Length: 114
Length: 113
Image 1 (spheres, helix red, strand yellow):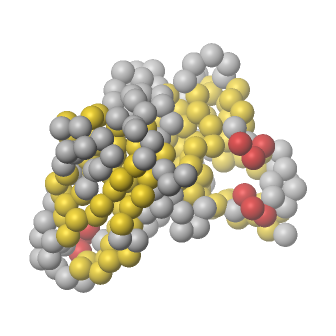
Image 2 (image 1 turned 30 degrees about the vertical axis):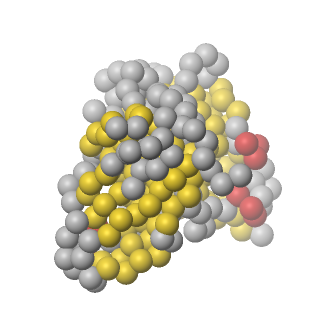
C-alpha cells in the first residue's frame, strides 16, 4: 500500500521569500511522484511530476522538487514566492504498474504575506 | 477549451435522496476518475474507468455507482444519500495510464442534510 505524509498543514511566508513544502511517501514498490496545486474554489492542476531520470524536477511558476529515494521524500521548493502562489498544495504518489490512481497527502496551505 | 466539466456545481440533498453528478471531458481521454475531498483531507478515489464499458472501485466506493457508456461521459450516482457523503467531488481524466497527467474538473460541492 502507498501513503503520503505532508508534514506541514499550513505554511505562512512573506512575499519574495523562499519556501519548502515537505512530502514523504511510503511504498514497498517504486513510485511516480506528483505535486498538484489547488487555488481557491478550483480543481487541482499539475505543478510537476517525477517519473524517472534526473531527481530534480522543475515545474510551473518557479517551483521545483527533488526526489530523494533514500529518505523517501519529494519536497517542493520555490526560491521566491508571490502573492498569487497562495493556494493548497498536494503531494501524490502512484504505482508505475497501476492504472494511474493517485494517492494524495492531506495538503499544505501556503499563504504568502505581502 | 472546456477540459473536464462537472455539473451541478452546488447541491443540497436530503438524507435518503439520490442524485447523479455529471462529468464530461472533451479531450478524448480513455481514463476517467471520481475523487472526493473532505475538509482538511486529501482526495480519495471513489471509482475509475480505463475506457468505455470498464469501471473499477477505488479506495472509497461504498454508497456510489458509476457507468461509462461513452468515452466522454462518466456520471457518478449517489444512492440513498447520507451525511457522510457531504464532500467536494472532483471528476478527472487522463489520456492513458500511470504517469500521465490527470486533469481535474472544478468540483461539485454536495451537502447532505
